[in-house]
Image 1 (tube, rainbow over the protein chains, first blue to last red):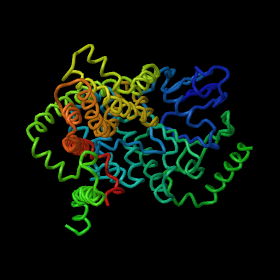
Image 2: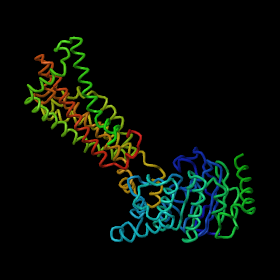
Image 3: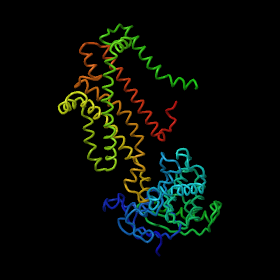
Length: 264
Length: 257
């Protein structure tokens, strides 16, 4: 099957290709396929090469062996159709929330050359996006005037402002408290439903993975391999209440068993 | 204004006056001779008597310092950006710079005199040489501490190295840069005075040297006070500039009370 993202027999060493055969294997013989518009979650013990996977898919690093294809093209440079968000919001403290959102538009073509001409249009788009994650009216605030959850929402908006086809999330809710995290799950769920973009979520939170994803991949500890691939059949739209059903808990429990094995 | 705020406002004056009072008292109580340590009143008297000379030479010192400092800012900023840009250049230049910075600038002045003669030029160059190092190091540090995740976000968007430098690196290093100006300006005064006291017929450094030769100890101290005042004023201007330019980086309430 050919998907939107295809990793075939991918192995990669820390330090990239330059590290040579002596480098420690980060991932080994990874084969993953994610369809267009699909929500995939990758879970695994810490240090299993999840972040390496992110870098391989976005073209920040290239595999030692195997091939990575995104959108039908072999990845040989940064993919430019991806938005990324990390555990740390990495907002620029000298820019207001709105200006932070406009940053990708100052870099990605064709927006880059049209920014000056269409400024008001882009500002309107950014404000709309902020409103859609519950940050309407906060555009003029500086990041350090926002709470951790609000900063992370802004970071998500920044990943989405240029309307990427692919959203890569690397433990984006890891540093938040439980309630804020669940709130943001719903934000992501709604964004995915509304925009039909492909999302890859790397996380160590199984409930998060099962609640959000169409498919969950379980990775082994280093060198990372895919141990289990599980389709989540819980119908959408999913309400937070679903996380308390037996069906949901059974899936989480089952996946947890695989992770425990993976750690040994 | 609350009592506590009032006290903070007055604190610099109170402490300075306190220092002079203790100094004066100690000199009188222990009957220290004036040629060893003149009391502040004697220094003030020297200040009054020699005001035209002190004023004229202070301006000369200030001018050389500011020109040297301006050169250091331009050169330091440029070199800091270059070093922050490339790891190879960083690896190549850094040891050279550390070595150069370790050389006492006193030892460089005779060479400068050999090349440029005595007076204004060696003073400017010594001020420049002594003050550019902190600027370079700080600018390079600002660039070196860009969050790797942020770099990834931008690279994945197709950002070039120049883009990352312009959008993130340079704004990020500005607080470091403006912070380093406070150190650099005070060092620049040191450089100027070193050069003036070795190889010049003008400036506060030269004035103090002459006063020493004539055993006018209060005048030496008057020269020191003039330098201190110039240093404080310039430092204060740099601090204001820093707050104006990079207020976003100074939001901690830690040191405000």
